[in-house]
Image 1: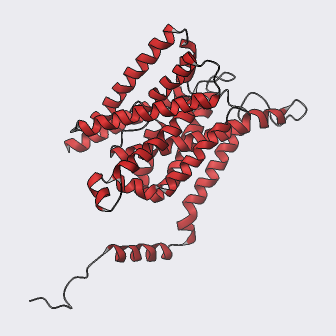
Image 2: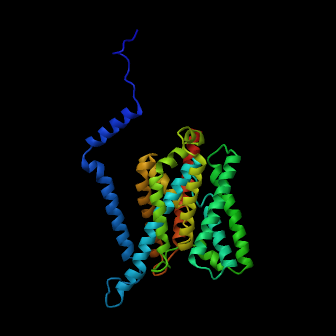
Image 3: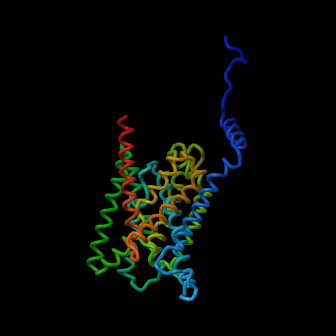
Length: 346
């Protein structure tokens, strides 16, 4: 008969938390803060490289270099930071809400729906301002995403691989409708410009709406724990007292705002929300609270590096960043599919 002294010690969440905090406190400052410091230095260096990359010499003060710096280079770099961080965050939130690592705004049709709303504004209100176009893109993105979520709740798909395929099929249908409308109203060039997401036209007076996504990112940080609970499923979320439907609506709304704003200002950034959360998860695990800053930083790195490639590969001309992102994202998507298939077979 086992005595009380011989019984194993019971480990609770409180005990585990104390152990984790004690372990963190025992780490040297260099080990605790070194990765964040290196990431900050790398980010600053990358953004500095972005500012100094281009045809115009911004150091030539006599030739108007400072004008190029403040009118185009700084706004372009700020746009890279805001759009990269926010679209990566949008992918993370969608993957949590759907419990699927292959889901992001361009694989569930959110971006195509936002583009359809933008196109309809061009058709029916051609003289409307930027806010009207942005509002239409956000509303259509929200409605389209909710249709996809409703489909997922009605039809239980056995394989996680089917979800993004169904989402891309939805997106292809919406894209076909947009193409038909564009041909019918002679707006095919406008539609093509939207599909080719680029930072070439970003300058003072055009990039400012992107500050909206900074507020959205701050809200996601504040609400991270709620999204984590919702990502555990409706039953778990309800058991801990969370209104699951309200959290899903809030998450889809924030993703739609981000997608709508970035789509109107920059254009489509394919696969960014797919690549970044999975890369961070592979390195750091699935702790949402601690991963969010790294998702922001990695999103900035990926979109900035792809933009630098687009700016230099055929200089002095530029390749749209969406082309580079599409090529990189397609490769990552196929690798993930193969890894998942190998894991399932194993």
